Image (tube, rainbow, N blue to C red):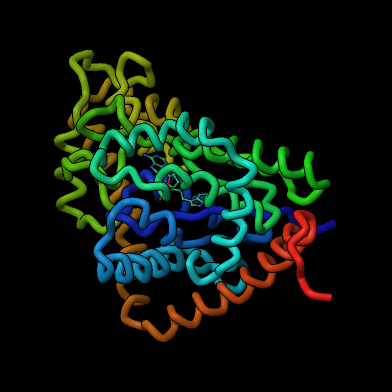
Length: 331
Ligand code: TYM
């Protein structure tokens, strides 16, 4: 039987956080043996918010090095830059005609980002989920491993795929979001009711994958908790629950098991244990990323080969779509 297909991507915008790592990249590694995997660097999504060109280029390479440093193997998965495969933009255009403006206006991320960037509510920002649908559908993906915040975008991808299949005949596989419990939604350390985000203005709210040990320990020491003085997973203790989730995700246990391990101990102990765990886990990834970044020729080779493999599959789907909608392809 054919292997199932996994597709996911991260935007090379801002500094990646442990939320991006736990919610997405880390889980991809575990799946590369069982699935046919495509993992992209979503630079076309990134430009829906203004980017400095030099920074965007640098972050694209940094993200490629990070993918590899986290353990993604270019022999097992296609690692590539989205803009290097033209079929993404081409399919997005077709899918635009199968998507309603009202659907896009209702997307939570569109509403959030428009509120944050009122000076730049561009068409790309609104069209973002359609490009994401094109990403996923081009590869006939079965599963899309993402954090909770992307669930809505995977749902609209399903709607678009079903609509297209219904109108034009079976063309796309209808994908499912693949969301693990621990790590699916890492919250801000300063405001645990909001997700940790690379675009947060308060640097203490997020732990970046590039933070050094002292910075990581300090950020966890300053994490907002509560006055219950009880280490437990509970809705009324979002800060403590978040710390337990982070600890559990890095240690490979459940948050409830982590809470048991800290029973009767103070928040100070919990915060330093989480900080140490995160710093220990990130140190080898950071060292490997630095090593890879010094070898630009290797990185560029990996991305070139990844783009070729991705483009091959993407072309097949795009040709099918063009045929179904009646585009003239020569005699
Ligand atoms: P992006 O770049 O915002 O985030 C990358 C991944 O990190 C996850 N994530 C989190 N997970 C847990 N806790 C958090 N606090 C947290 N913050 C972010 C996100 O859910 C995501 O999985 N639109 C996507 C990129 C994309 C994509 C795709 C994803 C483009 N095309 C196709 C899947 C399939 C995005 O902006 O992710």
